[in-house]
Amino acid sequence: MGIPSGWTAEQIPDLSGRVAVVTGANSGLGLATTRALAGKGARVLLAVRDEDKGRAAADAITADLPDAALEVRRVDLADLDSVRAFAGKLHADHGHLDVLVNNAGLMAPPRRTLSAQGHEVQFAANHLGHFALTGLLLDLLAAGTDPRVVTVSSPNHRSATLYFDDLGGERGYAPMAYYNQSKLANAVFGHQLHRRLTAAGSPVRSVLAHPGYAATNLQTSSPAGLVRFLFGRLLLPLAQSADRGALPTLCAATEPGVTGGEFLVPDGIGELRGAPTAGEPAPRATDEETGRRLWDVSEELTGVRYTFPAVAA
Image (tube, rainbow, N blue to C red; front, side, top):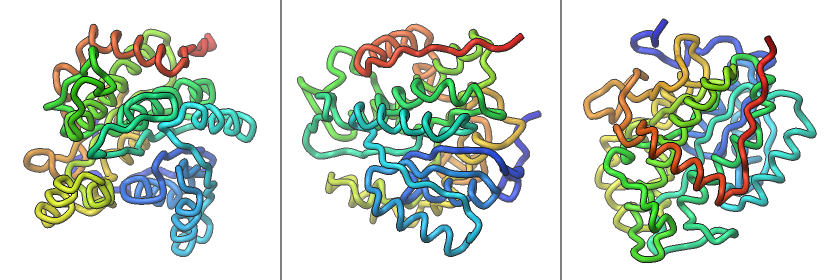
C-alpha cells in the first residue's frame, strides 16, 4: 500500500486496546511519540531511567489528555539486569504488547564510560539494551495485534563503522565515532531482526526510523561540549520540532501501509526534516554477514538468546 504522501500524526488510526512501550519517553522524541500514541487511545508504558522525570512527563500529557492511559516504568537500558527486571514485570502485568519503540539514546560522553556489565556505555544503552529488551518481549509482541518493533537510528549510521575488534573503545575511544557506531548497530539490528522474523513466519514487523534533525535534549544535554555547541546552539535554527521529528517513528509504529524491513526517514533535503517516507539505509546496515556477526556478538554480550514463537497454522 505504501506510505501516504505528507503523512501526519492525524492519520494515526484508533489504537484503543493496544499496548505500547516507548523507551526514553520522558523527553524529546520519546515524549512526542508517547503523547501521540496515547492521544489515539493506546495504553503507553513510559520506559524511563528516571521515574521522577517519567511521572512529570506523564503528568504533562494527562494535563492535555485527561483520558490518557499511561504507566511509568523504570529501566536503565545500559544495565542488563534492569532490562531483565523491566521485562519480567511487564510479563507479570500484561498478556500482550502491540508496539515496542526502541527510542532511548545516549550521545557522545567525552570520556570512555562503562556500563554495569562493563560495556562501552553508548553501545550498551543504545544497542545492547534494546537488543535484550526486544528479545525478552518478543513473546508478548507475538501475542499482540499488528505487532511492531520500531528501532530509531540516525543519519549518522551512514558514516559509521562497527569496530568488531574494539566495540568497547578500549584501544581508541572517540565520542562521536562510538555514538555513530551505536546508531549503525541499531540499523543493522532492525534489519537483521526483520530477516529473522520473516524467516520464522512471525506476525511481528521490524521497522527502522530516523527523525532527521530534531530539536531535543539529546544534543543540548550532551556532555561533549563541541556536540552541545554544534547541535544545541549553532545548528539549532535548522532543526524541526520534536513533534515533527517523531513522525517517522509514529508512522512506522501505526501506518497500515508500512512493511517490515522499511526504513522511514523525513522526505526533505538531506533527510533533515519533512514528512515520513521510505528511505534507504546504508549498504552496510543491510549486509547479511554484518547482521549475523552483530547478532551473534549481541547474544553473547547480553546473554539473551532469541526464541521466535511458533505461529499457529
